[in-house]
Length: 120
Length: 120
Image (cartoon, rainbow over all chains, first blue to last red; front, side, top):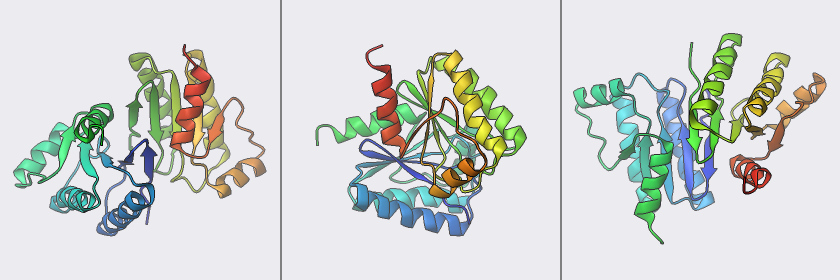
């Protein structure tokens, strides 16, 4: 099973998803991410999915789960780099990504997190 | 063939390598990276290899090639997150990663680039 690296940038954690996500990988990622938020005191999580071209409802729900989990640890989640085809699929699946914010690319995602954090 | 995403963070480009690199993927990455440097005017390239656990001489040379190519376009290259086993393999292969700077993690890599850029 491949592990998805979690990178720290300032107050945020960056997860760039490039591999086809198996259920097992998703569970491991959620646990790793929770550990990393606690260890680093990160205030935001950025999930880059620019390399993802296929999603199913399991992956769709993963974003909401990560966002809900992060919020409990006082970190906000932004999904960045979504391809148009992925957005269309998510809508067709009836997934509205509750509680997940999105941005076009990494830089805009970081700006979004910075502005919502303010001076806290 | 999978494409490796190139993310822009401020003045730098971030490439996080998570898949087993085939020769073809490496060639495509080098071309994408060159295009991105020109398009974004990036001053540095950060290659994260924290998810890479096996390297061969082809991959080893890739880092030097990317660094040389980036330098011609006025961007510096830092390889971050190298695992101890990978460092050992590279030394055993006799690869010294000419012209490539390294740092322990993404944040230190960014600091290294920032300081070597100075106020330019």
